[in-house]
Amino acid sequence: MEPSRSFQIGKVTVGGGAPLFLIAGPCVIESEAHATMIAERLAIVASELGVPLIFKASYDKANRSSVSSYRGPGLTDGLRILAHIKRRTGLSILTDVHEVSHVAPAAEVCDVLQIPAFLSRQTDLLAVAGRSGRVVNIKKGQFLSPWDIANAAEKVAAAGNDKIILTERGTSFGYQNLVVDMRSFPIMRKLGYPVVFDVTHSVQLPGGEGKSSGGQPEFIEPLARAGAAVGVDGIFLEVHDNPAQALSDGTNALPIDQLSPLLEKVLPLGALSRELDGAPRARPPEVSRTSGKAPANQPSSRTPASQPTSPKKKDEKRHPVPGSGERRAWRGRR
Image (cartoon, rainbow, N blue to C red; front, side, top):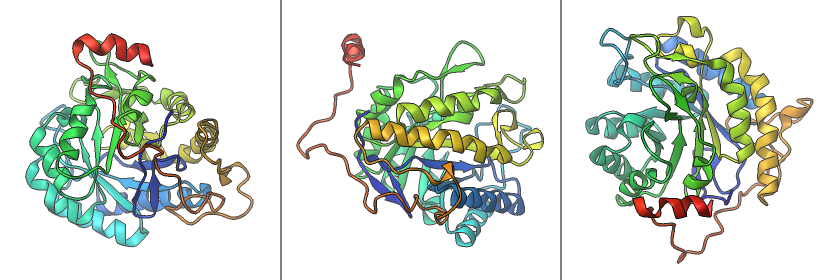
């Protein structure tokens, strides 16, 4: 795939052929102690494997299946906990925002504001998030085609913010099922923004448990490997120390003790994909793990100090959003 623009999120370089980065954490903040424990364990894994890491957790899951489902500690306590984790670990923080009024306080703490998939067409939310100055991660709605996400990105860019990430999290495939179309990654990349693959939500079975969603976590590894081989910029994984007891999305979460073995398979595929695409290859240290551990939240020491930025010329126009009559031609170009 052609490279996207490149920008920094704390110590993490995103896009432009930079090494594969990881967004990981629990679905929701269950308690301060639990979220901190998960963040610290993730930081250890990131340090051992040399993978750039952004910690994610939600303070309020406003789109749960049931009114009786756990939503989180709320805005005030949740942001306090995320600020504590940021100070303690030094990790950059991502959280999702569901309301316009939450954007400003969340932006004071978090480095990345995430637009939930169900809200990926909400113009006011996208515009206000864009004006926050923070990186905006837009989850592609389960109901959207890969080219339709261009409209959401334009709403953020129109606010003067081009630090945008586009995330694939599966497409509705009948009732209570999702499928991932691998063509979506190069199509979205052509818009010029880094592309992330949310693997764990892609194995979700929405509403499959009646008052909560089901999942097929046995497909996390094959999908993660496929996404890395395609050349996505980042992988998104929700992890938990005991998924069976998780208060949200445990049925599709990755047990945290399986994270290192998974990344040992995924990171070399990401490096090889970049080499095939013409980016300098950084041999991931997780292959041997015998020396030279990279510091947490930073790329491998074997990675070049500066990552290449998008080779696009300033006056080069992005592909226009295809109308209904042009979509067949759009697909044909792929």
